[in-house]
Amino acid sequence: MTDEDQIPTGRVWLITGASRGLGRAFVQASLEAGDAVVLTARDPSTLEELADRHPDTTLALELDVTDRAAARRGVARGVERFSRIDVAVNFAG
Picture 1 (tube, helix red, strand yellow):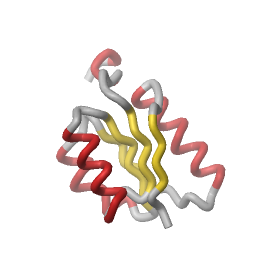
Picture 2 (spheres, one colour):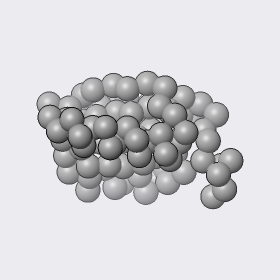
Picture 3 (cartoon, rainbow, N blue to C red):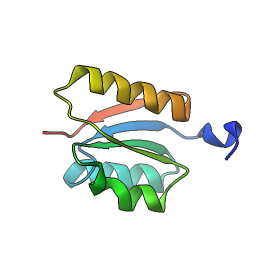
């Protein structure tokens, strides 16, 4: 993948609690709409299936939202990967 390929044309979402429930539903809807998603969960292994199916438009990260430093690192990694984050949605907890 080239640098130009990494810059999504749609929105870039950061979604916490992406492994199940409403978080997962938002992830799936965003991906179906052609958007890119930074997926987060306390256990990133729960995100592997989604990340494996959408390797160019997802970034799966471990994140406990009670850890502010980890949240900042997650945002920074998302921006590093996709050049920006347009929408942040918290479904964790």
